[in-house]
Length: 267
Image 1 (spheres, rainbow, N blue to C red):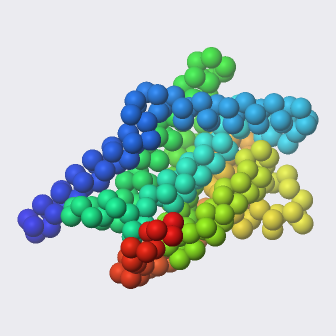
Image 2: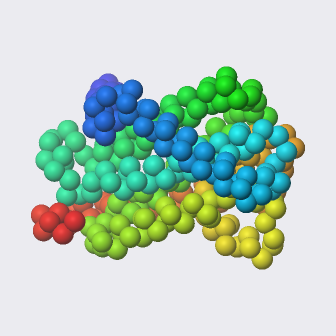
């Protein structure tokens, strides 16, 4: 039992230091890195705010805080997309970091997922504070439910990113294209600009395949007291995320055993 606890402690210590390293390697200055993430979200928020007002789509938003309506979609969108890009780019079985004895593929994947979650949660807190102080008070109908949807969006993005990572050694160019297409498609099919309940029935199948679409709509159901998210559910993204996670882990485990140095040169 003591060996198990010691091993667990050592692994968690490695996860901590690897996560810190993953956060800092994108930008040596922590405040500058956070500022960049906050600015990316603020720019996206500003673009969609102008777009919805110019196109006259504000009536499609739920009655309540319009800024919170936009934030509830953009926060989950950014978390999902950043998790995919972080884990998809964390390096597969041919990563040079794996030549160091304590480092493993699982360690790199976990640290990439946690660093993405940390940065997005921090930027979300900063933006909510700014909006609460400078624009109008931010009030969630059920904040715990919203955070549950936030974590589901992050976890499903992490699972999809793992699948892309596992398949990259076999199809490096193709998987890069597929990952880019998926992330760009979510600009529309995530449903962050409108309510799922306002979509006509014949359009719903174009969106319901997307786990992020369900997460965002359910998050708005928890955010606003007068919105009932009845056309989506959280079961679908959870089950789909677990299935993709299992498939991704199986492929990654097989690739780790048979990968060669020549695969690294192809990427």
